[in-house]
Length: 103
Image (cartoon, rainbow, N blue to C red; front, side):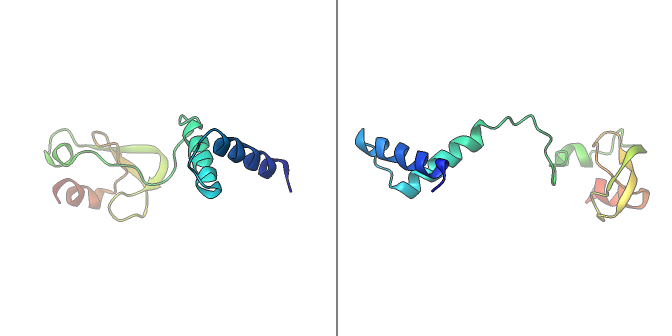
């Protein structure tokens, strides 16, 4: 057995000895959850992001497309584009802008 497994078993035995109620699997899940929450969340996040609120997106004021220095996926059609809305900060094509800001 590896050292981490033996350490987890020893910790669980101590947990039971002091009156803990977790079984060994639940105790391991608890350890993993605690470790996951202790990770620094300032690391860059990847994946889909939340867009602006609908009331901001649809009010129609000060939405302008500008060149984006990075290529990104259009929030509407999901194809690559190099433009973004300056107010929403979302990547958009010129032909997708009206639909995105009105639907």
